Image (cartoon, rainbow, N blue to C red):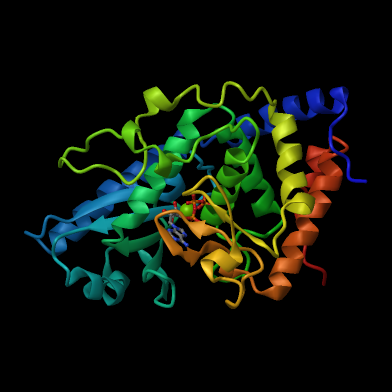
Length: 331
Ligand code: ATP
Ligand code: MG
């Protein structure tokens, strides 16, 4: 029999502990300011070097979705109508003043360059013209803004994934933060009553953009706020249910999580039942043919299951500290 509720006392304590941890995870204003400085510095470097190409530098990922901590990397998207920059950038980065190139990841879904700015002490991932990432960042931000519980819950789950070393899709073979965030949103959509809606299913709540286009998802935050008010769950209860859901309830072998639809669909219906690395299936909301879970192979999937069950057992006793204890690789 799997515990289905926290004791009142554990729930109260867990909620208080989560609030305290959340306060500690807030980014400091100095690091925030450095991120902005890095944007302006790069914009100047790039436009000085290749004048006349209207090169703009945008932050995305956690720097733009309200889920950033001081140890988050900086995700930067360079936007320019000048397509050649995409090929120029990778070799050129070695020579951009004051920046240290770390590595080019051309095997990534979108080629990125990882650089390190020693002056501002920031690590960053750069890409050119991957504007989809700007939109899915804005979608995450919108989900965060709809209900006040999303931000603390997501920041704490992200913190847990970092501590347990299960948030590295590229090198660790686990899941990216973005995938974890989509899992949190899917979980919140499946609550009864739901804490957040499926933004892609509410086209009437879209704001017109500056260029006259409409977003692919509802983004009228003012009208969307309050959607989850019927669900009275506390933060402690949500964290407990999150781990309960992914450790014990969700039927990984049959279903796919869909943030776009706000519900589960079957692997068979999506024809994903025969795909490689398909134990954890979660649709990318803007490109539903992509499975965000396929970065985890069989071994990684089993490891994730063990971590989720461990977390559930500790949270069921109201023990947040031990749940988020740093994982140390055995010697
Ligand atoms: P962290 O604070 O850990 O860096 P993050 O919110 O920046 O978290 P990342 O995993 O670094 O999350 O991803 C940064 C951004 O890259 C996401 O917000 C998203 O826009 C984009 N992204 C990452 N992975 C994918 C993917 N598989 N498909 C589409 N976009 C992705
Ligand atoms: Mg990031």
